[in-house]
Length: 348
Image (cartoon, rainbow, N blue to C red; front, side, top):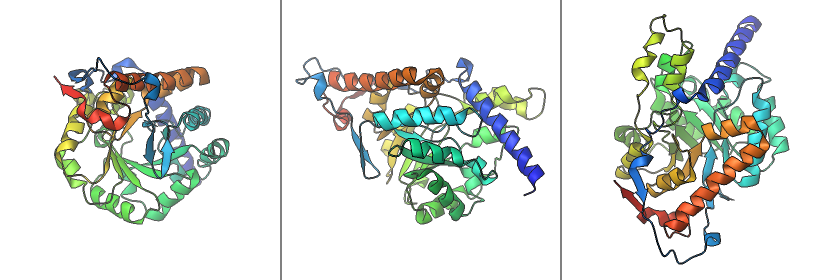
């Protein structure tokens, strides 16, 4: 690739990532209330027969014991402000025992210096559990060896492959080429040195797709359902409304399968992977409901980005609040640990 083309692609990518962060903070780009959590109630226990201090929200994953089931899902990366924000989040995740997913590592495919950010973050936070991130439409054309290099740059414990057909179809610079995606995911699962996680970006998973994913070697599926940040809305916000076909985004602002429905579909299929739930989780009570519906881990993005942009103290407070709310939900459901939640959910 020529230096001129390299520079142009770098500039385009950086601007797009800046747009994504700023637009994700706008309320109108949030599919608020669509997650389905409002229609789920946890059964209250008036006699929990325990103390709140006895509640344990620790989990085990990738051979490590972690203090919480929370994951900061990948969202920031590739723009000039991201190193500071990512380092702040990484420090908080290391301290509080959260997994941290990084933003798309696509920039490292054409910018040799892009991986330096993660080297510095890894040096500052040696024990934080990081998850790599690459798009499915890019993976289809990539050699596994290149994905392996992305894993190495992070010392990642797993690689997240994000699938975002709606976003790519509506994005002016999008790459809506997904033919051969299932085969590419299976090949990656077979050859990569770390576990593979497939993640949507806010549109959820149907029962058919979840069935199709069984037997290919995935470690987990992050359903990332409709109900939180909606990337179709964000790309519509970025696009020239007068230019065909990008003005079409308005028609898809409510597109997707809710987080709750995706979790219920997952309960019905014979899956051989963990279920991670993100998409509209805005409180520890939401997290408890998702866990009760069968989620193994809980992903949060927007509240964490919002807090991180305000500083370390606000970020710590936000993460602490989510943890405390989850503990209270378990306590008031009469559950000492996350496993006990499976019998505590009531659907209205």
